[in-house]
Length: 314
Image 1 (cartoon, one colour):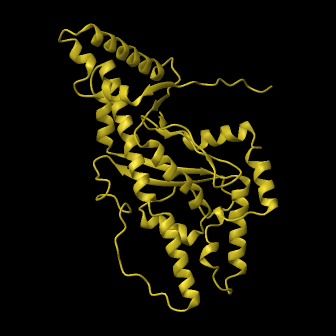
Image 2 (cartoon, rainbow, N blue to C red; image 1 turned 180 degrees about the horizontal axis):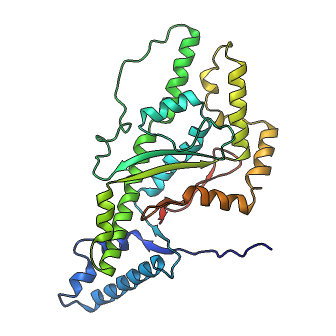
Image 3 (cartoon, one colour; image 1 turned 90 degrees about the horizontal axis):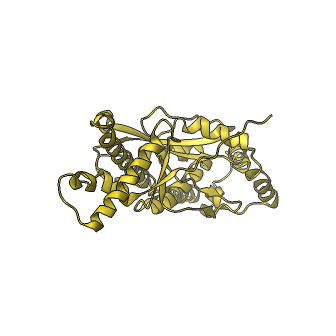
């Protein structure tokens, strides 16, 4: 008999309320030491209700999660960064290794495993770092380029330039979104500290000094087939000329009718159990807070994605 599962509806916290409740001179604390107008009293009561809802959501009887909506620039950063997860997953090992190194990223899964169900790309985020100066990969230094002589070498250089251009915003957008999510966690910790008294939660996060950011792409059956076919072709065509530049980026190229049918039949045919297992496997964390963006679901046509409003789930 299949076990019944509860669907959790996270409490939605406005970003503006998060800022108000976590600011140094927040409305609730200042109201206790000064008289307020009737209009201010109404706002104070509303914010107090919001704070109670936050503590209930994160308390022992709550679901342990909430959604922060209206986060500035979050939607743009998601649209820039998340599709690159699939592109990286389908990239050949040599180019992917180079791109990750150029942008100061790594991985915590064996990317050479052709049967992997997920690709994970990670970056270590230090709270005090400057986005454009202290983190490698945010701004790639201009250096000497390898001369492109001969048709075959010229084609290889053109392919490399196309790949570099496609991923040029990878490191910067990854870190920018990561630091945005760190700020949300620190502000939420401050609200919790004020509600229970003390500063232990926020201080423990600041003392740790680092957080790990992950860009995850869960493979469809078609993704796995593309990866294996690409590896097979590489093994059988080592002695043949490199492909023309416009044939780079197989993930955005024309697909056969068989591939389209496979995408349709399998991407939406995953069982609930399989999706549930993936979530448990890759999102269970021992950190104080785990901050997630809204996921981006790729439709059968790879150039289309299903997007939602700018929010983060904690």
